[in-house]
Amino acid sequence: MGGHALYCGNGHFNGYWYNSCGHRSCPQCGALKREQWQRKVEGFILDCPHHHWVFTLPHALHVLWCYNREQCQQLLFKSVRETIQQLSADSQYLGARSGCILALHTWTRNLSFHPHIHCLVTHGGQRETEWVKPKKDILFPAKVMMKLFRGKYLSVLRGLLVDGELSYPPELSKAQVASLLNQWGREDWVVHCTRQYSHGHGVAKYLARYIRGGAIKNTQLRHVSDTEVRYSYKSHQTQRTESMTMSHNDFMARIVSHVALPRKQQYHFVGLYHNRSRERLNKARLSLGQAEVGEVKAVSWREFMVAKGDAPCCEACGEQITILKRVKFIGGDVKFC
Image 1 (cartoon, helix red, strand yellow):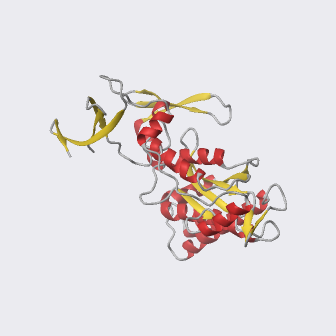
Image 2: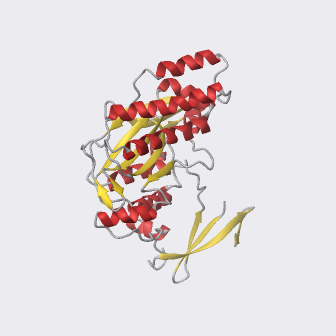
Image 3: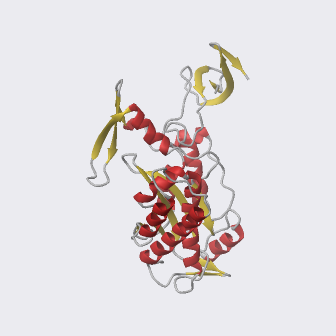
């Protein structure tokens, strides 16, 4: 992967930085990208209250996700997106175009498989040239969202099953899968609605953690033996730090189940926040007394480290390290590019 040689403005050599792998699920390489994504989002979100909702897939349907991962991931995004768009357009609730950010999350705190989508949604929307506030503080009723979301997701799965495009475990028959879908069409699904936030920046920061970095941090690894791995996590039930021990194979299986699919986004911008809705978004910003969306300068590695209080300085003269020269490591030798 190569690296960079570090120099200060006076030309003193200060060692090498090895290039990161850049993978979305790497716990060590995503900090700068995560900060850049967060600043980009904070640069265009509307200055209005936002809601934070979580749409969760029932545990019984996880087996179909494992056999149809790409289709199920796209379907989860599609079902949530269409649910919010349909209710936003309904004059009974809003009758306007809202702004929404969807972020996929597939793990619990103990790394169990638990696919769900976090939503950041504006409390209101733009209709022509005016900003429309919802008729109720809750924006949309949770029960209504749940039924719409459930119906949209199961409807597509049934269609895939009928067309022979849905894979499922060999021990199940087509009739059994159809029965499973019918059963979960009668059960309640979990749509969690948190309290209304006065702005969206806090939730944007929360969502940024899912964009880069993967399911586990290096600091969570407590012990690794020849046969087992022990890691810590904060229990959602007890709010205490607990630990879990498992074999190497089981641990790796959990980690791999959360690795992002290649070339598939883990987040979607919807409605006013869609990349092709800048004109509508700017109208909404003007309605709320905000300036039009401007260009957000990408934060550099040095700016990021200075903000964290960890700016590198020269060991010889104390000057800031500002020069990086690309190098490759070949057979133990250093070659400048």
